[in-house]
Image 1 (cartoon, rainbow, N blue to C red):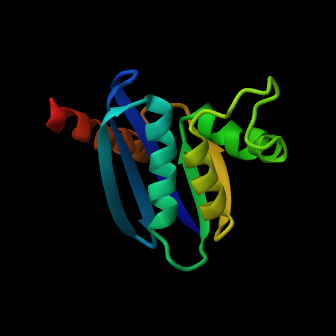
Image 2 (cartoon, one colour):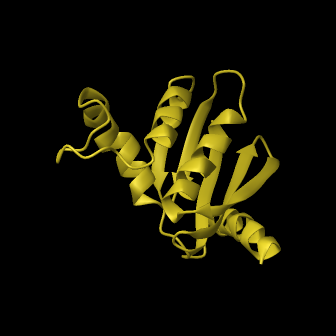
Image 3 (cartoon, one colour):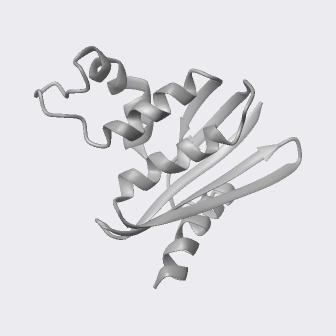
Length: 142
């Protein structure tokens, strides 16, 4: 089982945003990060999860830790109905960030993924490190 911590951050919302990923694969720590000059926090949270999933080319057993209820609830609760409703919400509005949700949906089907929510900024070492990586992009862009 590979443990992955993901996080997204934004300076302004929308604004400059960053994403960070910490992959713990057998005693190996793999760090990924990046960002976008004009984005939202939710897009960066989703992008972090996407980048983590894209890292693996062959099927893996993954546990993804996120401090984003938007990501966790979207994957575990909302996405099935969105797909059934033609990517519309229960109020018939288009799903925000549809292209990212579609990408994550495709990627999770290539792996065995368990999602776990963790409280952000609560001193959890690898969640804090993912946050640090996300903020690194923002700081380097200012």
